[in-house]
Length: 177
Length: 461
Figure 1: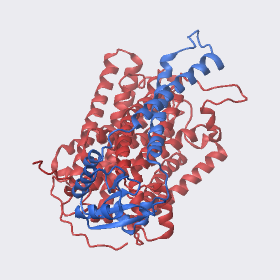
Figure 2: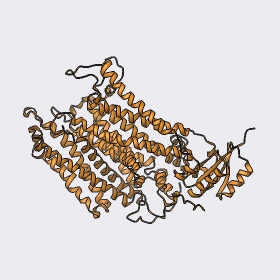
Figure 3: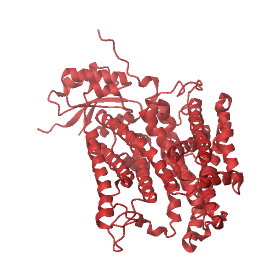
Figure 4: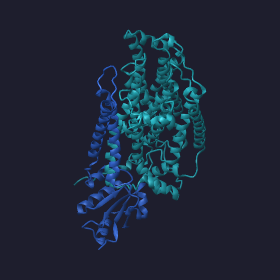
């Protein structure tokens, strides 16, 4: 059976209520939930147990790849592809390569940070069910939302709705799929 | 966009943000600047000046492409002239933006939150202006891609032992990373604009740019990691860029250039002129758009203090430069500094000493730092001083080097000035287009400064 809705969403006035609501939902056993806020809230990361992400690893790999690219590019060109003998100086003059190696390390690292951010967040994503809630436009202004998704094994329309009501939200709304 | 009445009390001197703001009013005040149908006369005036100067720039560049770099005053031995002076000046200005956005983020300086966005935009546009000069100075700018290593039928490759090639990599990396950092910072605010605008086209455009950002906690957690990592990458980058720019000079053996203290001296000078530009932009903007509650006197005071501190480093560098010239016992180094002080470029030298060292000492006084109009004037003085510094370093050293017989004086032509003022026009044009189209203050970061953004922890029983 295809669940007709994406989930249920509760709207809160302030970050404290949202964090408390997220904690309560986790305690209740809900796992497929997400919170939406107009700015990053550190406590929310704790409440939803979101600590680990792979971004640092991606950036590290990107940086190492950039450094290797920079160094090998210069080594290949100055030693193998286009060697020029200037006053008998060594072709593999590695100290002179350091700057471009460093710059490409940073460049690749930064590009992988941005691509990694977009990739891990699944962006660009022009459509998302949460956008179907008219009041959700305020999530980028001054309101805080908690959404329990219908995919959650504990999800039951009436019970979940009743549970969200106990958290004293401004409003609970259905999120159409 | 409804223009809500702003019930905001004037900020206390020590506060980062005026009391009385809410998440909604902060959002509206910053977003209204972009979403309103009304454009202030100040904006129109500045944009028009920028546009006029931009046309001057285009004219000067067209003439340069048609006739060659000979329309500038660059003659042997001063082949760098205005072009490299302006390049170093502009790229230095950009450094303050990265300092504010990256280094102050790592140092957890929360006052950066309301000035970082436009400072980063300033960086981006300053780098764009800077990039114009080496490009046009190539002589045949349309062959700029020869600077990059690529397989080609000529079977030649760049010389990786040359600081000029390092510069290409440093500046292009800097431009790319600054853009990425700026754009990542914009994402949540683009989403805000998408959700706030009533104009269908604007909603579509901001929607595409926001890439579907929806403020999910999962996304924020990754976003915060990304910001920190980008800041960590941008910090050594910004220090390296002006270091590499200074290598253009120090690796050469020209007297007055060949010294080891150039890298730190250039970086300090870059931040010095950059903060002057931040003040020069922030002071009129906050007055015109009524943003005194967000860009408070505390921000101006802090920026002035950074300016004073970096100015003192620059002063130390001048003293050290003179001392080293004497202490080294090198006759050419001594002569180069002596020529600077007493030769044909003495007026420029002494003016730079006044603008960069003597007059900025007034910033020690709180009475100067707390008056925006005076700070604006002082930032102009510092910008002039820093331009003169680059001019004196480049032109006076090249004009009078080892052989007296090859000495010659540099005289800028009207096209030198036209190109220089033209890039100021390019900068104003881009900057004011940015002010009109994108939020000039990071909305989501200012929201985190509000007292109500703090999560009140319940006492665990």
